[in-house]
Image 1 (cartoon, rainbow, N blue to C red):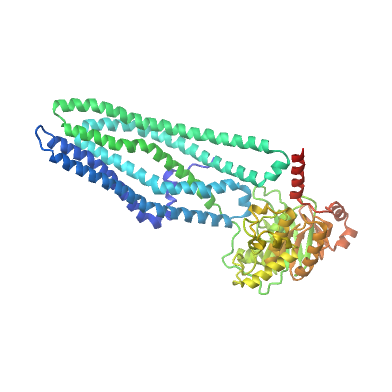
Image 2: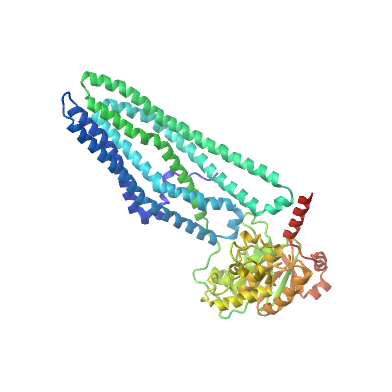
Length: 614
């Protein structure tokens, strides 16, 4: 459970966002307050009418005048309510949009380690549900809470001016409401925060199930997934019921006590009127005023619930916004005078934040010459993929350093570094966009890359796209329904594993980097396609420094030299032939490497087909 902060401390953090629209919010508040004052004026018209005009044999003219005044006040109240909405709705949606964009931008800047810890559903619920609720609270809940409070205060003052005895009865009913209100606040705040967190967990479960639907189907685990989801949904349901129960009890208190006070006041008022201590008009006006402020009092339960929910939403929002981006550009970034692409690991080490005493990589010292292709070989779990992710600074080294052409990676601007380094991972990620957009995502001058190069002509980008697809042997893209403009669906799941890998490889090539980092990019390709890709890669990589994780002997053949990673350390460096001759551990690894392609999607599809046939 997150640490609870005081209500006004949390709400005050919203001020920088609402400051630009504060004048319009104040005008909306003024309109709402004037509408309440107009509503409170109607009972005073009735008081004057009853005391001064409704007499035996009197004229009907005052009645018509009073009716017209009441009608005018009613129209004015309705107009002020409409004007209040006009003032606040558009600015509130602007604040919501800006906060959402700011949150998304911050998520883009935060480190990979942050995203490792957070479920995607939690982030989605903060970006959508929480901010949507904040907008509704800014446009309605906050204003009406202030107006309701002022309306009750003004109404009580008016009631005291008419009869202090009756007003005291109503004021006495407010004491237990205030006492219970403090208890309600603590309980409702806690259960509201839990409800919003559970909603985020549920969203994460849905997203994971949708993305992993093939695996669930292939292994026949749909029922187990449903049972797990049902448990989470049931827990959320129980939490929502607890919320409703707390709100119902509070609503009961704020409705019942004023009604009891109304009944007691009616008895006392009749006695006072019979004694001549209170006029009939004042008695009618008093209870009409009580009726006007009764609705805000009853409404206060929902408004308080909205306020506490908005506080929880703000706390959740700033949990993310307060997360510090530890991988940032230096104040005075540097880059080599001449970028050649020499990549050096200088006693580099890495450990995850939650296990600093268990380093994954230790004292890595490795020099890769400009234009050289270095294969990285090691058993599963030796840290190969982690080492690759240090090069584009997806993670930062925790000891030592990594440099390109003698400049520490941490001295580059992050934007510049990621224009110099391109990556293609075994676990390919594609976006719900066209093949063209996915391949040209990091291409210089495409508008998507942050490498500082100017825009390039459409013809030049088409040449880059064609070459990248050719090198990756991704010609299948041209035969898709709309060619390279075909939308490939969420995460590219409409493509096979091999097709996704080729698109990801083409994306890395299209970036035209000086340093290329490849994490077993050919694992899902068949032998013949792999041979063609390797042949083209040798041509393209001739001037590019490449670090490639190899899980197959054929991939090792791409390399000029091979680095053997053992227990988080570089155990040996040399040519493939030399390591085969001199290193028994290397021979063992080469003998155990996969000889054929591994297309998980094809395997799962086969399993699913077999399951259906049975």
